[in-house]
Length: 225
Length: 322
Image (cartoon, rainbow over all chains, first blue to last red):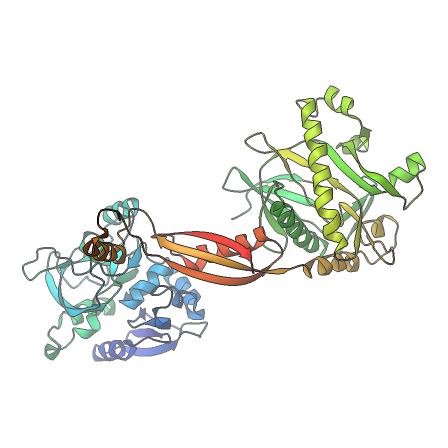
């Protein structure tokens, strides 16, 4: 049976159609869910909080979206073990909503960074990256101004103890590199229960050769098993 | 913050422990009792009114530098308070003769007293809360030192000086009221309990109508309507304040923008004097509140829930008259 994916849409979201395109291509049923809804659709397998600039990034990225009506049900869904994936602004929203630990800050060089980025797979003991190999180097675009992940020392050691760091930024050879000043080059994490994921790179923009990478397919396919 | 164990149930409130050992939750009940609980009733919604009225009064007192156990109102019925050990003395301040003063001493009902008087009652239901003097209080060990009794009287008089004109502004004559004090963890004596129409007598300045628990004691009826009237009148004293919130990255969190500006200042020749630059943001709010401390508490909650990201940011708040 086709997996059902709900894709959230806030004012200022701009990656919902790309995300829908990607999941349709993978054979999923998709539904775009307006932020003012109180309830997610029935029987869904995955909620994606896509990229963009929800509420114009006013105050802080994700800070206002967090209080949108739909977010309460997303929190319930996550609490009951449902899979939630936050991409870019979606990652920022999940962090602000405390569904993922840490905080997002402006890129260290204060620039908006938009480029193809190599990533190192740090953990595959999770649904999202189960199709990949530990230490594998993959490629996906990043496009953000506030992608510098920050977490305090205690939080960082907890992330490490529980293997919650799933992706790090690196160069073509796999040497860690850091486009935005993120702590320990962290590009993506999951929660302790391993059902809520956040990453700054855009897997939905890495699904066709013409886009420069197809690694995104193998990532997103993890949710289809 | 959640209620854990029920520590104490009094006539008007229940006290619960919380996960912070220095803080308790006071839940305001609907029970009405008089004559040391020989007369009992319930007035649905009374607890909610007393919680709201007490919240406003504690805020007003705090603005005038009276330290109280009040931390914040949590919801309709619950108030977060500091844990104190209650001094078992009911401190009563009287401005106008009524009640026991009239019955016991024959001072005509309604006579304005030349000076406010302060009385002590031993807080003991089994003994019917008997009146006591300073020497009794010391002999009975209700306080550790005589000087603490002076402290109670001084605070009670000061509170009267604040509340009398406060209520007068909304046409309420503060006839008399009861206070309870407790010692906080630093052994400071601070105001505790509640201040509401359960613990005060209010007469309408023009009509003399009673707007307090005497309506229950004397079977006048309309208890809740009267309490509601008191609340509505003091709510008209709400003011607009300006809250200035400064938010900046915590020490130890790299401020890239600050660093860039620091560099720029260096290249302009300020490098010798400028050691560090932090760039924050300022949010200015206009808020209606009952007191400055109320405005500050509200703003603080807004900072914690939305305005600041406390993982990476610190904030400070300045409240000025709007």
